Amino acid sequence: MLEFPTPETVSFYPSFQELAIDRTIVERDLGYRKTPAPEIVRQLIDEILPEVSLRLTIQCGFCILPPDFVSLSNDGLLCGEIQISTGPIIASQLKKLKTVAVFVSTAGPLLEQWSQQLMADGDMMKGYLVDSIGSEIADRASEWLEKRVAEHVAPRRWAMTNRYSPGYCDWPVTDQQKLFSFLPPRFCGISLTPSSLMIPIKSLSGIIGLGPDVARGAFQCSICDLKDCFRRMDESEFATEQR
Image (cartoon, rainbow, N blue to C red; front, side, top):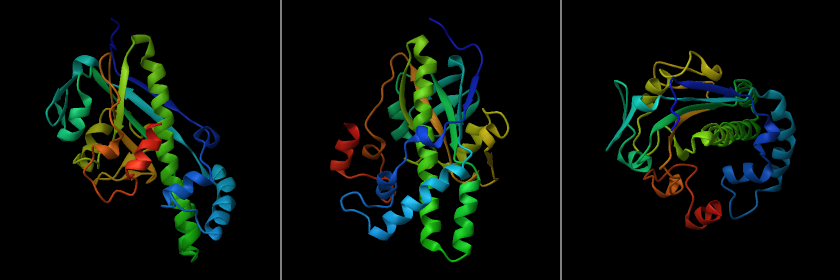
């Protein structure tokens, strides 16, 4: 079976159109999942979305660690001499992995600058909507990237787990420092502050388990015990997402 002899790092620049973000998705992110958003909110979203595409520098990418570099424990991963403390919830979803893809995605700095300027000018509603759209773009870019990872490992007949990020399911945010140590400096234009905040803010990082015997598990909300997460879905929404 083919192995990865050295870490492979790949980056992409997906377009806003490829992420397929529309008003319905933004309304969902705002909490309007069972009832329609007020008309003024719908109008603002329709006004904002065309301009969003002009203020983006979407980037995403991944690095696949060598298989003999990664081993799984009950509460995380050992990558060489670096312990990744995902916690037992995520570790249980990574069973039978051969290695991991370390990934990042970002909407770039321009959208958050626009949001901050709108709020500074007193347009809090519009600024908040732009901020919410920025979060969705970073998330959708990671989702788009999953498909590129799948294409990349398909010749090895490897499968993938879900993607998992520091800050969820007891995985400390500070572990981003460890993940970024596997990536080139300022990979995809993202850097970390000493407190592990990603710059640009509208960015995501994490891992995806890889190997011939891994599998995608339950949607993350069903395994995570973080009750106040803004992305948490109820059972009916989970069923819809699975379909």
